[in-house]
Image (cartoon, rainbow, N blue to C red; front, side, top):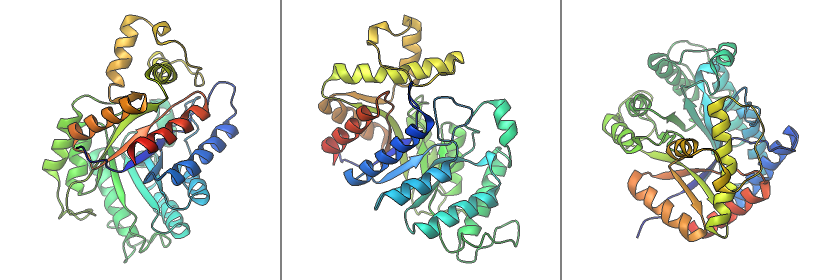
Length: 333
C-alpha cells in the first residue's frame, strides 16, 4: 500500500472574473484558515509579477497575514525569486517573520524572475546565474545562523540571527536540481508545470546531494513534488472546474491578459492542437472524484519517490477550491 506522505498547498492568489483584488486576497486568507484546520503541513505563496490574474506579488506580506490567522501550519514562500531581491532584505524580512511566528516559517528560493523580461529588469537586485544564486544562499545561511554573519560581509541582519530558517531550492530544470543537490538543501520540483523528465531531475538531485556543503541543512536528499489537483464529487464536475486552469494556460501561451474565467464544457475548449498542448504542460495532475484523485496521487507518489507533495488548485469559484481541499483532506489524511 502506498504511504500517504505529507500534503502541502501552493497558493498563487488567483483573481476570478468579477472578483476584486481585495476579495481574492481575503479568500486566500480564508482558505489558509481552512487548510490549517484540515491538517495540511505547509502553505506556500508563490511570487509572480505583471500578471493580471494573480495577486501573489508581495510574498512575505501574504505569509505574514496567513501565519497571523492560522495556528499550526508552516507558512512560507514557493518561492522568493532571489534575483528580484537583495539577499540582505530577504534575510531581514524572513528573520522578522521567524521572530513573529517561531518555527513556522519556510523560505523557498528560486532563480527564475517569475515574470516577463521587461518586468524582471525593473525588479533585478541580485544575480540569477548559478554561482550568484549559490553565493546569495551562502550569505543567507550566515545571516540565519547563530553567529548571524554572512559569508561575504561582516554585516548582520540582526532579526535573522539564530532563526536557522529552513531553506528550500525550487527548480524546474536539470540545472536547478543539480544546484539544490550541491547546496545540500531540500528540493521542491515544479513538476506541476514542467512535467518533462521530472523523475530524471529528482534522480540528479539525489545523486549530486552534498550533506557537507557549507549551505547544507539536512543529512539526506529530501524532495517535494508539485501536482495539480481538483477534487469534486464526480470526475465530470472536476474536469469542468479544471477548464478554468486550462484557459489560464492558453492565455499565458497566447499573451492574453485576463482574469480567471468561468469553467466551460471540456469539449468546447480550444482546438485539438491546443488541448494537446495543455495536456503536455499540465500532465502531472489529479483531477476527478475522490477515488480518482486518491489513485492518481498514490501513483505519482510511487513514480516520483517524493517525500512530500505540494498541490496547486485553481478554481473560478473560491467555494469550489475550498470544497476540493476538504475532499482532498478526507481522502488522504
